[in-house]
Length: 475
Picture (cartoon, rainbow, N blue to C red):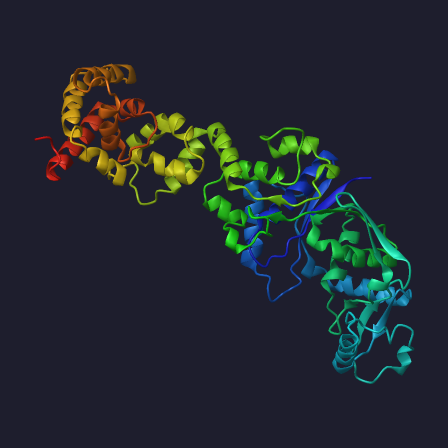
């Protein structure tokens, strides 16, 4: 048997990270089994489905590197097939026409509520002769659900789950306007696509019992179900707006790399030994449905930062440079800026957890004038800073062609020893502030070498002017 899995999002919004994880699990399992992974867009809800949302799903899946076999299948294009199956089930005696009016259904609901029971259709047309149907009423088609016994699902994640058939109603397959219900469309599509394994969120577990009734009526073997627990927020509640980011696009905007998001999502609710850092291709070699946890997992942004830090260090410098420049559209970038950025990348990417942090940290290489942040201003206010900067200016001006990290280091240490009892911070802090505009940066002496002597001297001079204008030189 060829394993065929599918991811079937409803395009009513962006790709939720829960959906992305479901897609990854399906992708991994089909790869592991040498099977196929199909994509179906469940766009039957015409009011809520938009082309923009469909495009976003494709874009987000591609960004994550999740590829599917063949073309995406649109559920809406298959309405005639859904209707045909429903009509066929009526012919086989597995389903029936129901001519109840809205009023009759309302009356049944009211009666059930009065008795304190679940409102349920009373099956009045199940065995009635359609010849007795009222004129001019368009019927719906309902399934003949089993009346006794129980429906059993051997779920690959949840284990054996059963429901007494007395709880199943004769639900609608085809509405009176000939359109299929979601429940029916899903089963016909899964049957026609040859889906062998349905891996999806456990919010669909209740649907699975009804869907099995349709598979049985069609005489098609039911796929193996694997219902995976939903992702919860750090507080243990189901993920929602108040937890912050919840779509793939938001994680992208927040500066996470796609390979980090994949790694992190795969580790939410699935594990392989003690492995924490792995690609989706590695995960696909290990993947077993039985290894998915039956309990919900929690989104932990600190852990995601940790994973992203790992992938930032592995990422190619050209790729990171492009990401940094894309996040600084306001800057005019020339070749000199690009060369500095390339030279500084090794130290920059070792410090950042996200592309946003990386872009912020890199900015001092890309500007022609440094703006001092609050802490840098305070460092330059320090009354020793003005003297220290004069000493640095003189020392670095003498270095000539040997403007390298080691020579700069020697010069700085000598100033600290001669004037500040060896306290290196007295020299390093104002130097860092004047070159980067910040009090935290990549290793600053290497950064000075990368900026070069002319640019370094220019920035030190600018800092001295700034101190002078702000009256913070030593009297």
